[in-house]
Image (cartoon, rainbow, N blue to C red):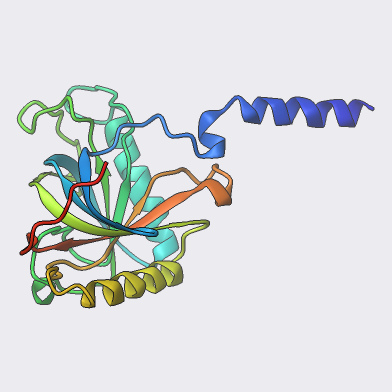
Amino acid sequence: MTSAISSITLTEKLKSIPGFFGIRLEEEPKFYVLLREKNKQVRKYQPFIIAQTFIRGDYEFSMKEGFFRLANYIFGSNTLNEKMAMSTPVFQGRSRKMVMASPVLSEQKSDGWMMSFVLPSKYKLESLPRPLVKNIEILKIPSLVVATIRYNGINSESKINEKSCELISWLEDKEDLNIISEPRCAQFDSPYVLPFFRRNEIHITVQELEKKMRRSH
């Protein structure tokens, strides 16, 4: 009986945690949808600021180390000892730089991963507290047109590759969209969220649309 009561109590406690069930309260960059087809979208993003770091190593190690570095920065390890709110998504990509609008051929592959945190919109580039370590860089990302594909579940390097190929294949059929960046993964939930509720996306920056597309809300 005691065990059953404890189980019910734990379940009720979990239900009181919004993030556990994929209810997101964090801020994310503002955008509007230009095109929507099932789990794929083309979005127009407003400018936003990121903190990014490069980690040499495999996917699992890079994700843990990158998250640790960036979390330290936003939780107070900075020049102002200031704690910043967590925003989403967390970006990851296999490139020395998270260049979100550079030609594909100019992005070099490397022996590691780049991870980026989106910073709260209330900050300006010049007013942000600076990292205390040299391996974190602060960048302002300009307005971008981005193609995305959404999926749920536990992320992995193979899943990122699979969904990247699916999005690239979809884009190749769009005559008015031109790929101008490497794919990057965007994760919106922590590892503590139930896998079914986890929101993951692949983002690819594309050229401005040649023909007018109806804006969706």
